[in-house]
Length: 239
Image 1 (cartoon, rainbow, N blue to C red):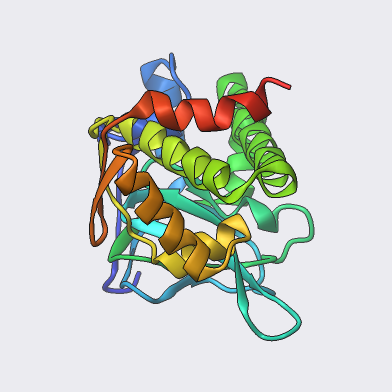
Image 2 (image 1 turned 180 degrees about the vertical axis):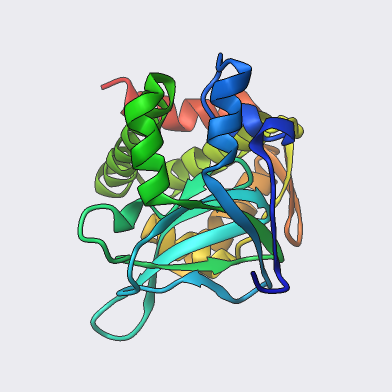
């Protein structure tokens, strides 16, 4: 075991409800504790895994924030997602036994390393774990479908509104404010994810601020009018 890895138990983790199945008995919980081999620290700017690397584990984010990205043909990074504490990362590797994207820490982070062979083995014994893994995979499919809809049919304002609402909703599930957030990603990374130019992202943030929908101080964003953001998004989503 290297110096940046420490043994950890899911049974006493405060994020357990977010990334582990509910309703397990004590003996099942003890078995699930066996899944987590180690905890790893990933400094800001470093990769958790790279495109093409052999897949052997899923990672539960304990602290910190990540982005996943792929390199486009012209060498630029295309951001494919942002992941935060309590979410599982690494599902992209299940299909071909190799990771298909890079995962980069946007701030100092810590992850629980869950060996996939062990997850599969225990899933056969504990139905709740199997259902939970399927639910995580399904959520990822739904998320990707949502992003495709976002990029395919929405104007810049609608895209940014949907992005902010999604982010604040995920943070709120982790006990954070429903109206205030610190953006761990740059405007450029948001643009890459939403299929918008940097200037468009900056201009849309400014317009939201002018309209009294949000208040922006560098990376700190306060949502002043949630309903206005929802109104921007809903006409599209209700069609």
